[in-house]
Length: 203
Image (tube, rainbow, N blue to C red; front, side, top):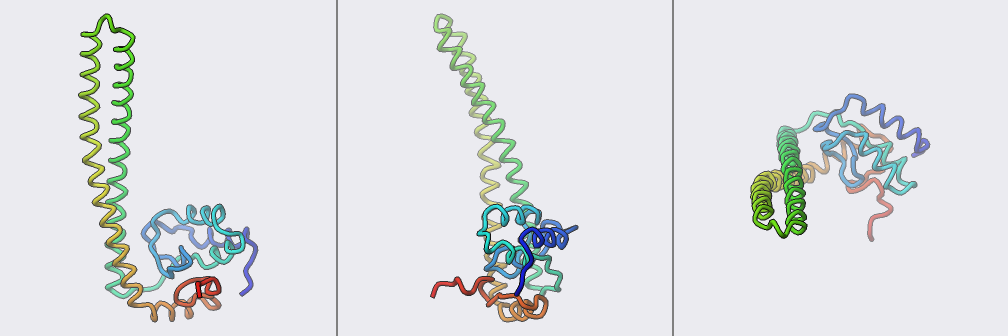
C-alpha cells in the first residue's frame, strides 16, 4: 500500500471528518480496534497522532482513521447508544466536579488568607480566629459540595467503562464480520483482525 505524505494524509483525514461529531462511529481511531465511537472531536485525535505517534506510523494511522458509515447489528448499535449516553453523563459530572473544585480552591484561598491574618494579628486573636472559623466553615461546606459531584463523576466513569467493555465484547463477537467489512470497505487495509501493524505483534 502506497501512502501519501504525512501532511497530505492529515489533510485528507480532516476533509473526511468534516461534519463528524462526538458519538459517531469511526474506523481505526486506534490501530488495534477497527470500529470505535468518537469520544472527542476528530481533530483532537489527528493532532495527537501528529504530535505523539511514531513518524513512520503517522501516515498509516491518518489514512485509515475515517468515518464508519455502515449499518450496525441492533445489538451493537444499542451498545453504542449506551456508551454515548454514559459518556454524556461523564462529561456532565466532570463539569460539576470542575465547578465544585473551583469553589473548593476559592474557599481554601480564603482560609489561607484568614490564617495569614491570624498569624499577623496575634494581638487581636479573637477577631482573627472568628474570621478563620468562618473561612474554615466555608471550606468544609465547599469540600462537601465537591465530594458529591466527585462521587457522581466516579459513578459515571464506571458506567462508561462498563459500556466500553460491553462494546468491546460485542465487537469481538462480530470479529469475523468486522474483518469482512474491513476488506470490503477498505481495500488494501493491512488489518489482520488485531492491528494495523501485524508485523509488530509479539511472537
